[in-house]
Length: 298
Image: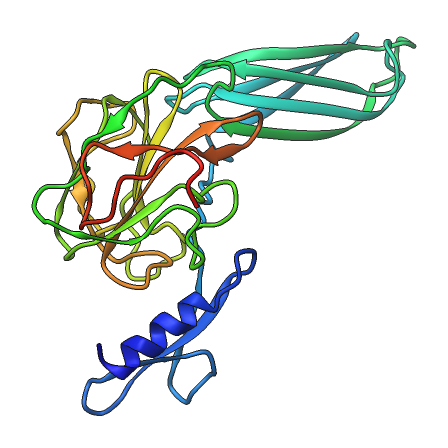
């Protein structure tokens, strides 16, 4: 293994399990790429962490409608998945029923639900309040079913480069059970399980502005979600609201977002109560000679 690769691996292993890591990549006049934990002239800084920060502000909204005798609060969900929402009303004034209120609901896909109605205590004066609104994709009441995932790509064999609880970037609730599989850019990525496409990104170039790069998120019938990250720009073939089956072509693998090299980052998540967390899963065959993972293995 070249010295620069050894250095790169050593730097990755030095990354602590709770902190992101900044590396600096530089290319010399001969095209040789080097990595260091110290800034160098002309080097690019990379902060590596496979974060999935999906923007839903335009698709999940709180609506407050005032009328003569109070305020009606509704949640609108324009996504193709159920969404759990929580509304906290604090410092209520001129309102019947106390000074605070907490409401949590699951809003079905493509629908709106009335969360609560606050009635005025003294007619002729408005209700005062401070609102806090939170949401997460999925229905936490659904129970996941056992499932062994066929590998979500065509070709290979490919090598598993980071697995469960990887010290490099697979830490934290959202990604600790993810797997990274190194593969050439342009490798066909397919649906590993049937479901509904609920979120996609297709326009990130290079590192882009989205840590996950281009991705496809699929909601399975048991409420779990498979997410395929770091896809090639412009390669996503499916649309939100589309049903897919095993083997449906999704996209091509890439090197977008916070990615150290061409690979597929695959993770399965579920809503555990206003939060998405990764869950253990198994491929139905060994990958690159590394044994299948079982629940709880470090």
